[in-house]
Image (cartoon, rainbow, N blue to C red; front, side, top):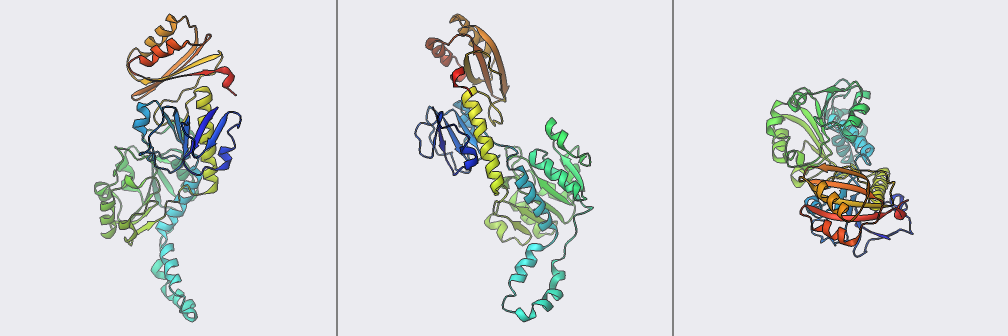
Length: 393
């Protein structure tokens, strides 16, 4: 019986996938095998020794202490693409809000409540104050061509915009899905100098934190508009406020309000609504649950942010799973210990990602406890786990 602790309210569409004869699911379970989380902050939480995985029903994992998890062999999953359509639709709305002063007009109209008899005349007189350009025929630069970025690029092209995309790490799958109308930028600077609108779709990391800054704003078109529904930290806030106040930039639309941005007239602050649709919550929950089940029952890793993608069809009755640091001769040490215990390996796969590696090893015989103990003592091995075929669906 696997124990799953939910750290947030999770969509029933996902939770209903757990077979009740093999899973216990609750928000207060001690010693869980896995955590299922949305926005709960896990940085201050002590993890029990039983914890094998954390699944985030969403793309960002800033609320999860990933390095600490990696050091303990805890696989962290996310759900890229599960909320992609929800975010894409809000980007299109943000594109229009940044171009036409719709919000300003609505707020002004709301102030006329006590002047009911004058409304028609005032509207006709003042509407030019809220004029803004059409997006058709304008150039939009899409930075990051993952699940969301590709959808934004394709829909912007369908709306009649000229689209330039930049992503030096674009996947083969994303490239296949990208419209042929999207022009490829060789450099970020090349995109920024041409774009009337820029939208961000990259993860927040040490290399991307604050990467849109005063230096980048200087090379952009005067009055260019920036949309950031990815992560607030991607933009240097103080410097974009300065660029807005000097009218170097036209508008900044962000899904990550701060006190400073809320009082900046040229900033449009959305209260983090990117993935706030029932469909996105359902999709992310379903993806997270399926990934947890595959990992717990077969050792398969898909959409992990700290361990490599790894899958092996099981044809033998016994399976050994080993997470280790990515250092030389690890596979040799593992197989030597198994051979010494008289274990016949029928299939093996080893993948690595940065500092960590993961092994799936299928055997004809069960691995004796003394061999498992020896494996656990090998320098560099972080976690050892076994699965019997009878536990699989």
